[in-house]
View 1 (cartoon, rainbow, N blue to C red):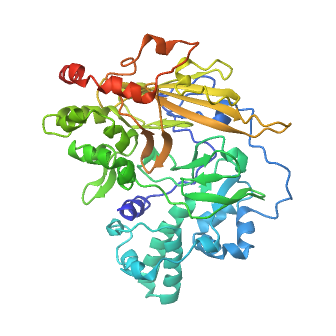
View 2: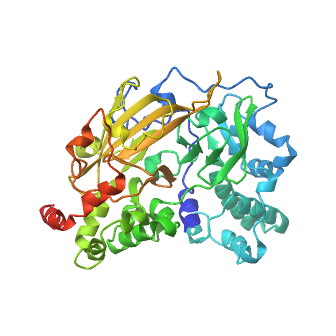
View 3: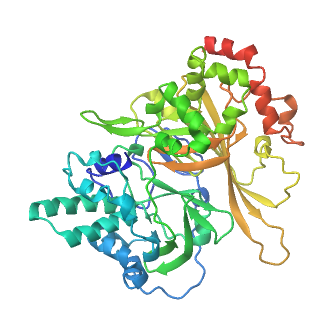
Length: 511
């Protein structure tokens, strides 16, 4: 399914991105103060919040060439170089002396050939038996960089008649180009420590009609440098090799463009099987999925954000409520609750927001963003966690409040994104620190923010959100500036849903 969608979409033009991630001009739908002109897209990361701060690269030996030249001269990147030479547009970008970019390079030992017993079922013949402009979406297996390079090897070994040979070459270029573009961050050259300043970065891969034409993003996880992961799975094993036009980070696994939101949740049943089952029962799959349908083209959501409750979130519900929601009698209410967790036509990350361009005036107000001054005190809801046993010095860096219209009409979510510079209290002049990002939705801490998807963003929540809004289920003492927020999240959840029989049915009937 993933190769169906990817290769079909890539039959359109891929744009080489410039350094900006801002959307096209038009009526502003995102209002961010202290950030210059408004646009449908807003970068709210560390570098954008503080334009005077640029990536700092420690003194190292002088680079010997461009990114392409550094890779092509190193024998441990022979497979990657072969792929780059085959896709000359990507090679030209990495060899462009006027560019400044970041590239995630996979060495030969990490590009292991696929297991033949499983591989020969037969992805090679499947990849080349369809017409590039019509039936490529019939492919049922997604091809990663290892498989794509293996396809290239077999293509060169087997040969083909000239017409067939040209078709296969076009198909391989589509596949390799898309995967290689996803390994490029074109905005700037980010060294290892600087990568940790933001959680997501725009890649060079843009797919027409997906994410409103914005580039696909990758996720960076970094608690302490040099331990850095890309999209959770790929680890940087050799950071910050300098080139004249950028920086190279060597990774232990090739990066893979992510699937659509629903498919990504479906691939992790240990955490999201209840949610995906509920979405299917409520006929909301199309609100999160994106797929190609014969004769109809793309179907589903091209841009969406979901606050995804885990299996644990559903398990914490009262047993009687859980039985009710998943019965025919509660199906209508279950659908409304799920719709409240979905934000359509908007991609919301902790460091980037984009709203789908639309003509309807009401769509212009989906995002109402207020960026507070970095030196302002942290409001009470940023102390949601109990930090009485965690006294790490933290310097507030930025604070952003966002109002989001959900799929459930006339019901909004209140999101808060805050960044702090956390310093470990270690004796000595050089104290290690890192940028800590926290996302809250309706005053609830998001367990795992910024999971990137083909068509949007996933934020994992460990408790079902109260569809009545953020003001319900709270006590007057929770707002006390001095004491902070001392209620345990499990107690909160019980208080919200423990008395569901007293309010849920009435709420559903009124809405």
